[in-house]
Length: 167
Image (cartoon, rainbow, N blue to C red; front, side, top):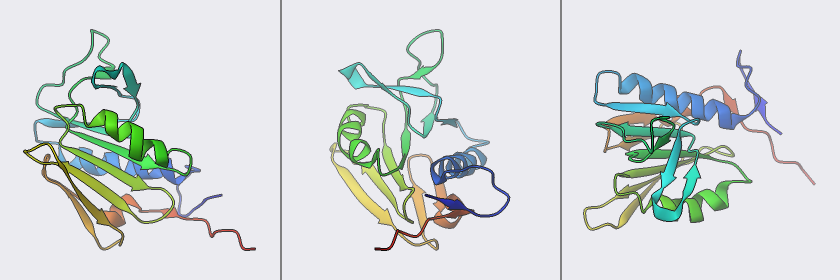
């Protein structure tokens, strides 16, 4: 369904978007007390007992883990999900509901793999969440909690979307 351009060998925009996003964050966080983790880092979503695998996780300060295995993070600062047709409804609804229970979470970002669209939810001091959306490659999404600025052109670099079927 997807056509990828350039020398890239990854078959799906989801992998490319996750790699691009993680790479941009890693570069910007290099000399700061924050760290970006790829999709293999599990997050325990509050007291629900649910463990999720966000596509990219950022933690600031000392990471807290569930146990000595160091593979389940308890205190993410930013969670990023790459949306696909099959995961979008769950990521928007149930997963975000669970993520909101994490006291450490300051920002939740959803990046569409179907078109250029990045959505950011930011926790406010009163516990409510503000919403921001960017839909142009010229736009930048600002992750204020970690002082990172992600250009959509960089996130979507070498990603081409398939044309919808006609008929």
